[in-house]
Length: 79
Image 1 (cartoon, one colour):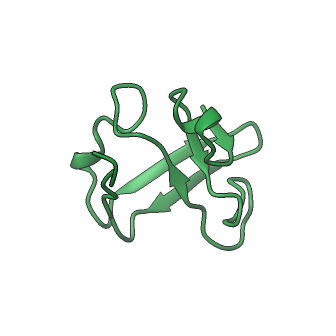
Image 2 (cartoon, helix red, strand yellow):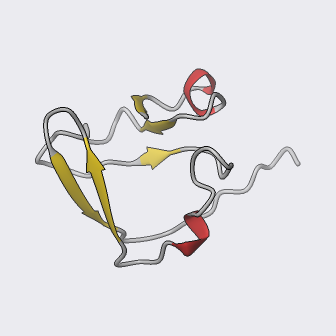
């Protein structure tokens, strides 16, 4: 499930969030930025994704296709 925002209430509970300053999932304009932890419930197979991989997201309103432009791993600086 994809939720609006990237707060701890969303990301830490196993959801994918989208950055509120990016385009909404059903928008036909702009870029959508998704965020989530690299865990078994969210992005556990992220390491298989490479640039030019197509990602399909289905919502109640539409089916959207995205092309991966860039993959960036952000490390936890508290570790």
